[in-house]
Image (cartoon, rainbow, N blue to C red; front, side, top):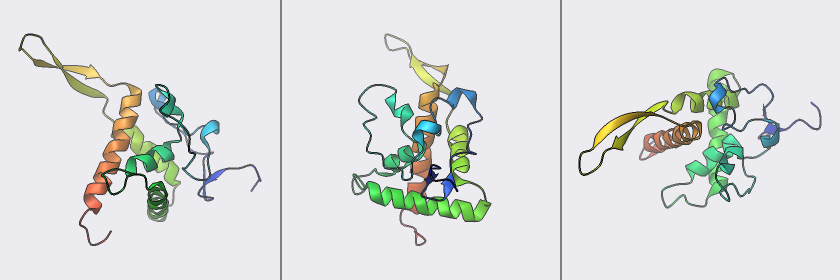
Length: 157
């Protein structure tokens, strides 16, 4: 192991992680500039629009875990939960959990949605394509919401 190789939590390498969907490569940050040991960079990714696409994708998962009042601001707890979840994924699949998570984000976001079109009270639904950043945002939100709902009031968690 070289001294310059950065691994997430000291275990999982970013090198073999790739995004197979070409439209999402700019919005899922697993490239050279977003390699971190911990998903806690303390960066200001909300200062201008589209800067959150530069935030490491695992940190975006941790930030999305901090919802629903009693979990607000507890980023270290969210980092610990993500670390344990990646351990479980690695034990079950024997693959890099970063790649599993990137594939889940790629497959989890919608490609098409509907919007309301109309004026003067007549409203109908119109099918529209979804932007890549919204696909990533929606996939992360749905992953966290599903995990939160399945863990709430569950004796296993």
